[in-house]
Length: 110
Image (cartoon, rainbow, N blue to C red; front, side):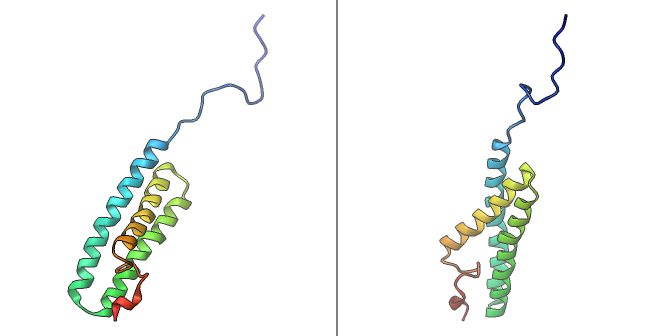
């Protein structure tokens, strides 16, 4: 006689782990933000006005923090990795450039 089917949670297949996907896309997000930072920063600096630099800093903060937060809140493995990567890229650019073109050091714009 076969055993009765179980109706509750029990041993079964484990859900897939997405750690590699998240870490890989985090690196891609950092690289992508650095590329965007170089492009937007170059355009803003070529205009040579404090307003253009301020607008560029705002755009970069919106891309890094705003889009990163939206991607993390989507709660998909690919979006979590990409969102964390964008925010990490923004933080690294802020540290490396002492806040220039990330909006953290507005005294440099005057």
